Length: 252
Image (cartoon, rainbow, N blue to C red; front, top):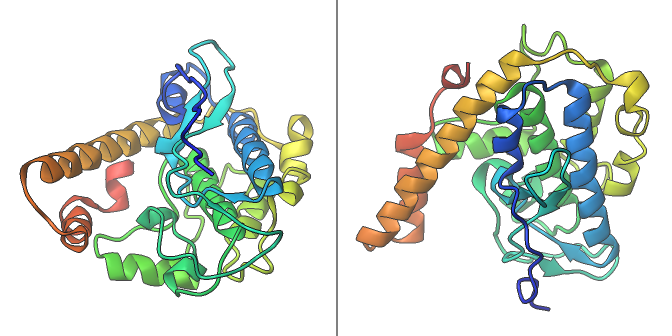
């Protein structure tokens, strides 16, 4: 199947860029964002498609209208699976969003998308990722161990229900990881009005601005490297992480 043969026109730009332009952004807004992402992922999974490269760059808005729907983009790495099939489909994805099973070169399937959604949700709530390191090997070790936490003070104001959903998404064992359909039934999503906080999260917005700027810089440098010099893919990834990835203080 050619997933890119009839792309749906989207004109609203990136979701993460829209968030930082808003006058108000709360935990409830983050819940609504991840709900739309999960609905799209669930639709893909029900039709036997695994995206394999979910990340902020691939979350676009249908239009520039307020409240426009979130759309998944770039199915270039997508694969088709039969039911709950798990197999080694090759190493694919973006470093910070790769699941433990992919990094361990184990059989994988639909759960890899849920892991990426967990990373995205974490970022949506505080503006920086759960896994980071300037060294790619240490980054991968963190991911394989599921070594993330909820540091103070930024996580102190996030509800336990939000953290519970993240924990279920970032479960190292893919068999025990929550599915898209199950996540959509989580109280933090389906009972958002009662459970999720509606307090404006200015610090999250500020961190997201820096996170977005950092993503753009990395993308620009990689594009320039590819356009001007003949680097191998392995060498590009090495330079990409060693020289550009920075400490979380940059997000704050």
